[in-house]
Length: 257
Image (cartoon, rainbow, N blue to C red):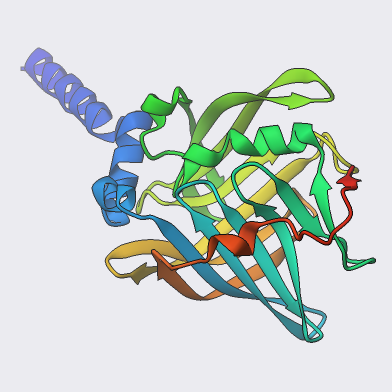
């Protein structure tokens, strides 16, 4: 009888382990099921995010546009001016210099690295196998009291100072709702090179059947972040191509930052 009981317990433990076991593929599949379906995200042609940032009591409106063809831009409204940052028309990447208020092109290496992300719209995990990306479940971690699955996402190598380097990010998926709560990645260049960039996500809300986080925080790990609040998310917006073009009257200097 004891042997039967022991065998029964082994079967129960094994079955429970199988139920609780998750693979990276299963987690990502469940993620898309929970946020509206991968097939519906594939139909998106663009996204427009109307957001705001609170800087020392001053609310600054921000508009972020991302299109399926890779075009994107961020428009900051400040003191009656519209300042464009990270504008990409598919070939040229440029931003407005905050000091001189003139448009400046980014260097070729930065532009080429951004081109690698053109097929990441609207989510890098969408059809990741077809993109040649790798995913790996690293285990579980607790983030601010919430149990998460830690998934390593490896994309195409980026070029840093002429050398190819691995492009790796770590996503932390809520183990109950299967949505990302945080992503971390190493900063490859600039003053913060070598530090860990950290973005948190919360307040997932429905927009025409799809779910998006309406609250973000971006910054460096263990140093706090800048909160960004989404006021409205528009699916498939109409955006004139001219909005992404480098101004004809701007100097041809390159932004080396």
